[in-house]
Image 1 (cartoon, rainbow, N blue to C red):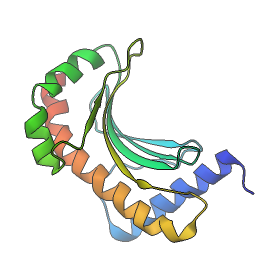
Image 2 (image 1 turned 60 degrees about the vertical axis):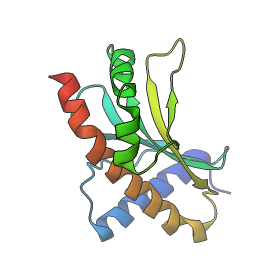
Image 3 (image 1 turned 90 degrees about the vertical axis):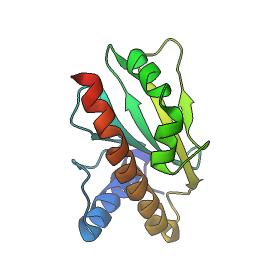
Image 4 (image 1 turned 90 degrees about the horizontal axis):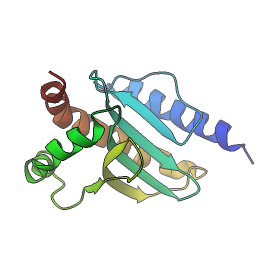
Length: 149
């Protein structure tokens, strides 16, 4: 069996390869050797985070808010929850996660259950991750721009 870091490295490399074949507007960097992949939105404290957690068997796409203004920005975004969820086409499906005692805040969409060892799930997983990341990027970039200026 492959080690966890190696598994994630190969999984995310596969995601990069998939995105290269299908074209994308996402800002992709070298594949990480961890369960999450941060994609910058171009504004300090805002990123799309893709998670493929083997241990928990889940996929998720989230807006990750970090830095000193994370809680304030989260609160400002939460005021627009209905509009944001409609823009994403995910009414009532997002989890608005306030993490007490931590700086980072999350607006999360959970995906289908997954097993990173199962090669037959790779393409459907990559499709879901890419599609959600692109929609999140398109939806949240204007908010990030407005909140940082």
